[in-house]
Length: 485
Picture 1 (cartoon, rainbow, N blue to C red):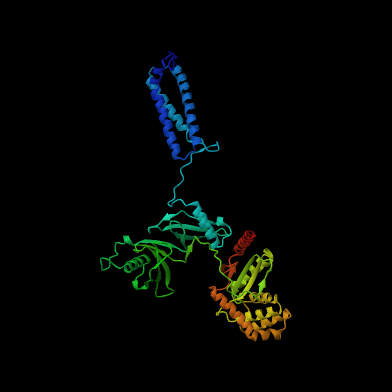
Picture 2: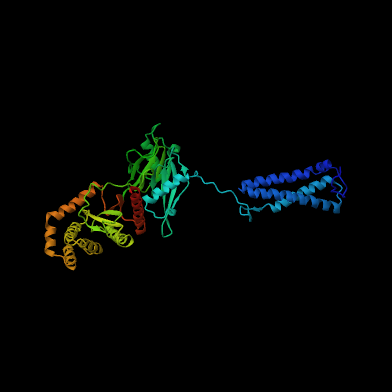
């Protein structure tokens, strides 16, 4: 059987060819296997591995023909040495050509290193979507892309997890917070402030005159050392309370000192109180399984014969506002409400105004009486009175409130004697007191408090956020109408 000659062109049987070149083939095959392993570690797609394998066999053939040419020229007499040399040449060529491979789109690119693994566990996409929607509605964020949830991390307390929350604002900055949650992310604690974790089980100096010190004494000593408080009597721990998260407990912490206000913080711990989270900032407990826009039943309060802005016949959204004419936040809310109702969504939104005068505002009750009595002469006069009070809050006092009332009434051509008689009567006072009681029944404690189609909103957010909420209610109202047809 004739073979192929590689040295001096002499023929050679096939089995001798295989034996003589076994080292050469094995060397190149080993190189290919090493290269494939290296490429897998660098997360190269399968298409790139196939291209490298194809390139290997092409290069091997080239080396074989090249060896024949070199063997003819140099006439090597030691075949084994020739095999070793060409094996080394093959390895060298692979070292030169393998730093690059083909990417998924067929364009040569440098090898990609593996992605850095985060410390947290991969988040469930469905849970993240639910959490983002809940936070979007709770925090009044029109654009959900501004909400960034960090990876889920286990804590030292069994069944409790931790993740970062970052909310971007329109100015290019961001607000940072933390989330403590259970495994199913059904209930969360939203923490707006620094969080410090302490492991009291590793405190070598926890023994203070007893082999089994009480948990309070143990925690007091640890806090004394951590917060550098000379006198332990300045540390006051509140009673232990259960939280919505299983296995997590809560207690207040107050640290007094000789000058200034005391430091107040929150402590979250396990049952043994050997793992502690010290939080200096607001903590809000939230149930992600429930819609944050839960509706309040408004059928029990008085909404008839009240000041109304907007169309009552065509409105798809009704806003009930409890407000105070002396409240600066109500003044800001009034401007946004007028824009939303009169400009952005005419005929789709209406506002029902209810007085909720605060005891800390001395002239607000008299202002409410005058606006109520002006409405009886001319419904639109109420809003002119409201606008005047809000615009001139800084200059109005108990001494000149009547001057402001008379000036506005005269400008509107109202009957002053009728207005004053109404303000002195019991009917107007009873109406304002009725509004106050309605607010108390709904749990109103501050102004402005609004109910948008029954959804409670305390305070007025930015105009775009409030408009987004109103638009969501308009859509929901339309969908409800379709279902009722």
